[in-house]
Length: 245
Image 1 (spheres, rainbow, N blue to C red):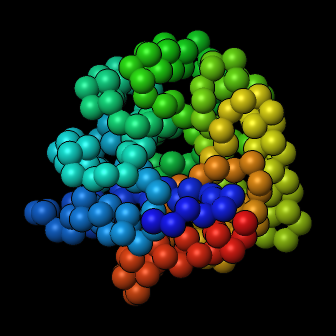
Image 2 (tube, rainbow, N blue to C red):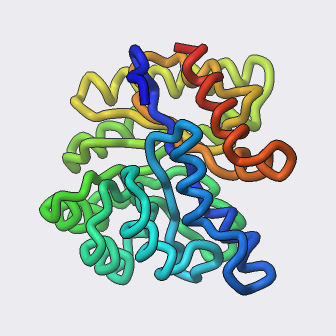
């Protein structure tokens, strides 16, 4: 793949390929095949969320992703002993600690790193000691960035859901929050990422934030793939991100 100047990485979340598979049972569609197609279309990494209730990605999917894909795997996980043990056994490239509620359809907001500082500390320490790049999925806010800095994580991922679902002046303000917090994270030596709710229509302003190093996008890309194919969906997002830079 040709190197892109000032490149913004694209992580493709394949959770909802597994959601479709699990709605019927069986082996199809295969999320590992989706990961391979995403890589061929320009993805820089693969994200998969192993939820406690296994509603989409399963333990077997993680086994196969680790064995069969060449791209870095970003394992999204709750801060539980079960998920910690799985991460330590597999040692993915990265582990992103996310909030998780059984009743939610998707992750509804960022982790409260400031309020859960002491709870998170041992998870961050043990993952980091195993050579796993630890990330926290947080709201774009000063208190959250400062807590992440005190925890010593190398990466934060900003929840862009509020931006994605806002309009007009509210969206402008949400974009500024993301931009300001990306700058603060970078100033503190933390690599800022972003994701949630991003589409072809709203990705450019976020992609243009110079400090952001990676966007993680899943649900929209899988939805678009129904109409245009996954390769086309990923390529179009890659092109939109590159154009914004």
